[in-house]
Image (cartoon, rainbow, N blue to C red; front, side, top):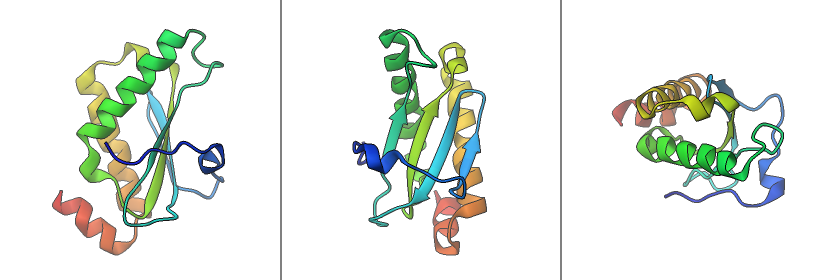
Length: 122
């Protein structure tokens, strides 16, 4: 798996940062401090998921979907994946399809031109 974001300060994003939405999750991307290797962070809050079992399952699903589409991550960005409650009802194919759409949206709309070429080749 790729590097993960562990520091609380690294989870902070602004409204100007690229984002994508799905019924299952939000993605917030921000310019990476080290642009050679994208980092990922996963959030499942107590406000959204009351039980720890649900929070862990949501993060596990997000990790699986990101691992499956790791070639679509743009090295110039760090990604933060925020789980929504609908993720608990998601099937694996539906989640992977939603993740692919969201990552392609960010890659095509916000990534530098060099990174766009790499995303197309993946």
